[in-house]
Image (cartoon, rainbow, N blue to C red):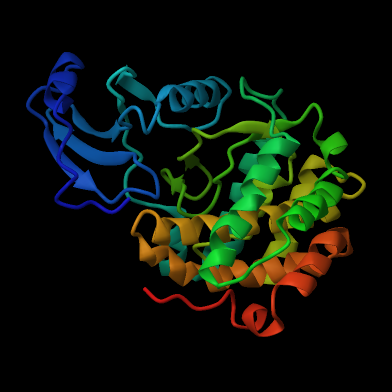
Length: 331
């Protein structure tokens, strides 16, 4: 979320920090994300920490706290919780520093394979655990997300489309993978280069933005990592990392087909969300990423497992609009 003059330091922040033993610390606003959450770096005599402001009723820090503590208890590096007041939406967490995977690879592209291999190994470690205390990623949630494309992107492009046919196509595609995500693994849902911190070297990775975790298919976070809306990952690197994951976690029938299914599902959702962020929330900067996401969506649609959805696109979306990378926008 972009900070504006309407985004001051939370009114209760100083009292909360004083109660947590961080009284008198400097509070520095940071760029946020696409939600209502805001982040601040806190610098004081005890060092540096991060203050999350997740203001109710728009946000609820309880899912973040639950996921962070579960990850930490199971040997994965979520930020440690230093203090929290869930009722006020304030959480003080460990500061992972400045070295994100995204910026590191921008500076040191020759390390791409090693860094991605380590990120895949973190998923292998996560998937070896029993599912965490999260709800199931069921068909209703998958379809709620895919519907974002017809609810937001299609109207933005002036398209009147077959919404019932869209839902039916996704039902046919997703019903195939549901039996293969039981009992399931913990799915962080936003596992990519801007949510992975490098801690003291390339091998130790700190996790961010996992408050929406569910129990789902083990291909989902791999798709999130390798079909990244914010960073180009070549098809060659993507294929190498899928092979690395399967060599460590074990192959299973239809894994690559399910990977394509979830890639298309996720990318359709993201296109819808990015348009919503522009039209509803006044955040046009996300539009610049749509061509990248659209290209990945088209690549996923080419897989035979996406046949019903691919046929819907052929019938409902003009070829020239698809060839343009997801259309144009009058900002």
